[in-house]
Image 1 (cartoon, rainbow, N blue to C red):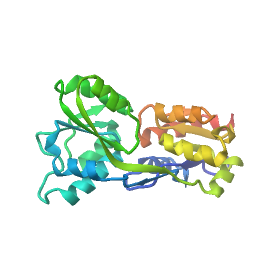
Image 2 (cartoon, rainbow, N blue to C red):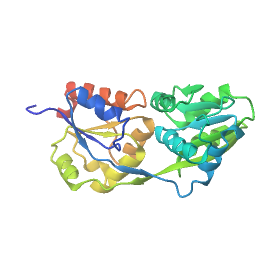
Image 3 (tube, helix red, strand yellow):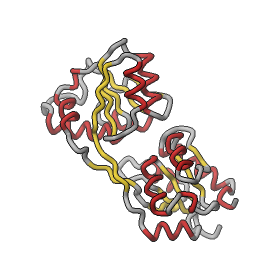
Image 4 (cartoon, helix red, strand yellow):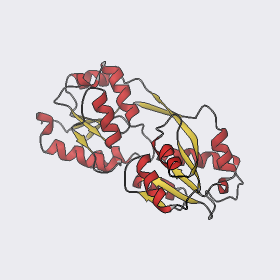
Length: 260
């Protein structure tokens, strides 16, 4: 290959974009094409109620880094200025290492980090750890998946689902679509099912992505979204983190999967 490998990153860029940083560290040329937009929920009522009085629950569960960030924004806005992010009497559970790192940087002590990659995995870990019948606040995207909520309620917990933010599909730039059609990029990195949907809309179906272009997914939920959109993922990260997805794509590129 006469040029450096080129990977389309569909995750919105932010200060914690470990996916882009890791790819660039490996000498990959990153093409930024955010496939989702993250914004406020329809209403902040439930998040503000939690931010004002987090001690009304025994556990706060953060399903994503954005859940942590939006909670902290509202905690600073509506809580006491001298208040800690989460009172000591409240335990915090998170999905995966990336969310745990974001929480710790915000000054939140993490009591439980799920080994699995989904909200359902976090619910299973919490069911083994929390006191029976404990009150739980599940902080996630508006209209997010209900697996965790359903599992915790079935296990007898009092669960309140808190809408912290909302994701919307973003329009994929025509230049990026054309570059993928021409196989001028070597891989596309999907970090969420919503990102897959945006690209499926742009292409008509994900099956229109050339076979030469590697499709990478950050975890099983995103991989399943790829399959539903018509193109199974070629690479699935072994852990649900940007760094793991970057490493998996670098390995696939080095192995020549892109020439298949």
